[in-house]
Image (cartoon, rainbow, N blue to C red; front, side, top):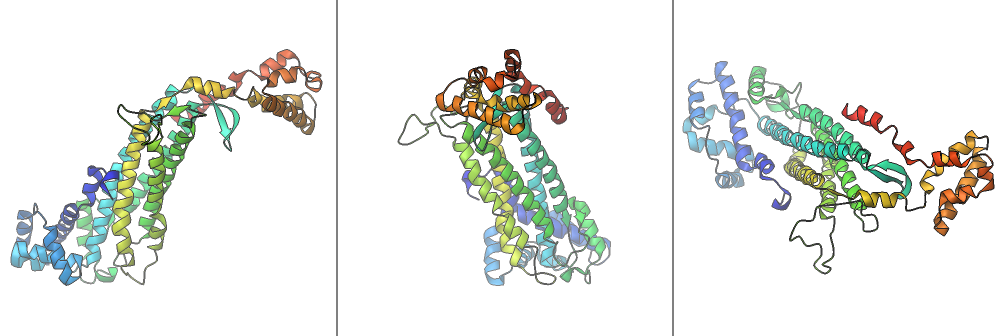
Length: 432
């Protein structure tokens, strides 16, 4: 992934140096287990420990791979150049997938740990907004059209619960991917004892894959990348909400605009929701990993390498981009500018027609059929919008309405507080 959308803390997990360190660690623990079982001399452990801080020359390894056309063999050849004759005891009874898949699990799990922390930070910022604006009144919209009053706090509480579900999904997915396999060719342990696998996985903090067909089953990975994509869609959902609310004719919230920031090369007055728009684009990139990850489940017999090229791309790209996106969204929400006065202004923009359902329900309770009640309310509501006049005043002058309602009852219908009487109940469900 390009530096523009990367954080070093995440890209380091996917660096060549880190990958080779993990490969070496896997081989070293495998040798320890083999030595304990008496398969190889115990002296090899001292040799490997003495070289555990080796600086891996990626350029040299790549040179070897040009000849061997095999990355793990190139790595093992490089190790033999460093430690000499003892290298013959490394990789005994193992196959490349033992190293590659176990390493990939470690990289995905470590990435998920960062992503979990990212989500926790975002949740904190969303909770702060939800509590601060618990009763900040605003108009709710369906189909982009004014519907009924809600609060900005409820919008943020909804985003909080969605991201909280994503946190639990990611925890589950990271556990599913936290497995290793050292099972040898076709996964039947013909040349290596299962105790080696158990030892290596325990040392690396992994669970043992129950059955591997030389590779770890890719349904695990598909579930992981699917979870990342759900999180990406939740990010976009919130980003799109911010983009809509920042539109000039709405202007209920806006992204923070820093000193010296420029919105347009042509129009100096512009303050654009660039971060929200960027998050929309990044979410699309993350979701691109889903279909390839699902298709990776289907491999020939015990294994092929059609999944390999895919994972070399989607592994780092999806996790790096999601880490960046979550961090950017957290900063956006932490510095979000909220305009309660504009929310209040928009709330009454349509002359009170937002109370139409309350009038409809009251008329039916007074004995008028729902069909007739609907006609009465709709006629007056649409006139209030078209003629830019008060919906309540129209009702006060409507004989069919006032035949069954008193002015006092109409006042109660137009009491906006009724829309917020259960906000505390909702908050108690979410925040306790």
